Length: 184
Image 1: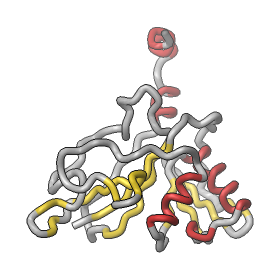
Image 2 (image 1 turned 135 degrees about the horizontal axis):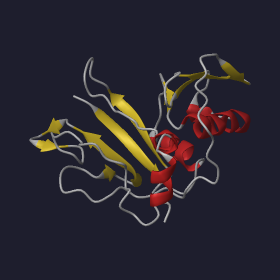
Image 3 (image 1 turned 180 degrees about the vertical axis):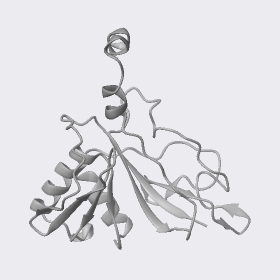
Image 4 (image 1 turned 60 degrees about the horizontal axis):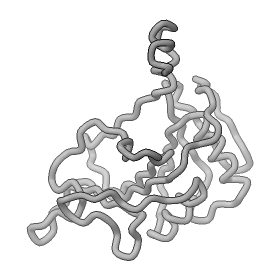
């Protein structure tokens, strides 16, 4: 069984950086940024995002622009901590409308509950006992969020994987003729 809280961050990023497939450790203040060496992603170490300082966030924001997907292990966040950290990236959306389960945390409409846990015969998360198919969060909106944050509360020992795709890299790999054709 898995449960996660997800916050949607609004407004597009002003700046997008090219991914640097580096395997070395980059250290900014106490924040360690460890690139995956893949098409995207980095692990962030040495920071408690519930008590984050301005210089630490600056390093994290830069890493997000550079790597698109960030992993923070061993965080213990309250709902308020998750919202405060998410707001550092921009204005937050409310949870999208779903038919199954609880859509958001009571009192915190910015936090979207995703879970396959059943309590008292009812799903506690928006997806019920089903799996999410491949998607881009809220891409149907005219002004979609620039990011999504997932705070995993319970992770299964195997399975339950979340996959990410670097669409900057996908676009960059297109032939010039196709880029020109889709530019309009």
